[in-house]
Image 1 (cartoon, rainbow, N blue to C red):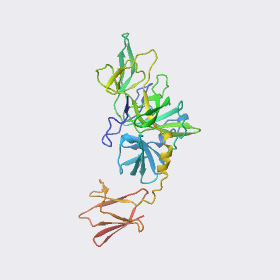
Image 2 (tube, rainbow, N blue to C red):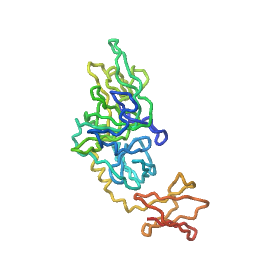
Image 3 (cartoon, helix red, strand yellow):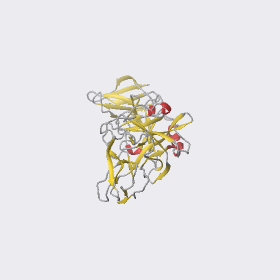
Image 4 (tube, rainbow, N blue to C red):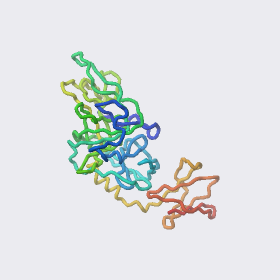
Amino acid sequence: MVTTLASLMFWFGTGPVPAVLFYATGDPTYNTLPPGGNLTNSGWQFEGLWGGFLGTPIAPNYFIAAQHVGGSVGDPFIFRGVAYLTVAVTNQAGSDVTLWRISGTFPDYAPIYTNRDEIGKSIVVYGRGTQRGEVLTITNALGTVKTNGWLLGVADGVQRWGTNLVAGVVTDDTVGEVLQATFDAQGGADECQLSLGDSSGGLFILESSTWKLAGINYAVDGPYRTTSTGTDFLAAVFDEGGLYMQDNTNWVLISDRPRNQPSSFYASRLSVHGDWIHSVINTDTASEPPVLQTSAAVRGPYADDLNASVDAASKTITVPLPEGSRFYRLRGVEAVSIILIQAQSGHLVFRYQ
């Protein structure tokens, strides 16, 4: 069984949560700065904040995120310190992939990996999950105490990166094809597993000299138990042997073997969604008129004014005169601004450009 990486998150309702987990270290400051050396520009520069998760710009006016982390039109996506309000959303049926249109234009965006040769490729993955927690141990049939991995730790609001390899492509009954990566004890200093909160982060593969977005974080193996009737838990597991894993309503013992049986994480495979992605981002929506929003306070919250009448030809918006003070702003696919407000025959008329 797999568990989506947003299972314990509340959309825009909690503080930020941190990052990927490592085999080599539990140091909470590890890989909290952009990767360098041969991993320079391997995707860190393309990650933005989408609520408590990450999202990745993939076109001048679009970013991509995991469907299961939610969100609403009008929510902000923060990229390089600038907040871009979302104005439209498109979900692909039978997948965990969502495209969000923003008001304004991104200064940069990630290219998509379109080749279907991901297996065996090195990856760099980003997330905002949890720190590594306490050591997870069991006593095996020989009476020997063995370490299987680590429980999930606390959240600290830090973005991290890690590395891994694409071990395979798996077809999930709910979301279609996903890339699989295993948490191996011999994977190197940056070998990582994902944790709760890492949903929607980007997974990048190097093509020629360019790192391209190949996946969107979706899920991890688990939950586990140490006994068939014990307490459920999630963990970064490099050896599942001797643990119980949920299979529908049953808990099944994973046989302990001489070799480690690593757990996996999964990311939506973008190479199979390329045609759909391009069909959405290439749609001409520049002619869509802006929407007038109003609030009783300058800081909001703002809501669409349902009484507004838009004349796109004259670039004017008309609303009845309000009772008392009101504040207004425009929400548009492109950057727009109010240049004139006039009172005419019991109405306010806004001119925009």
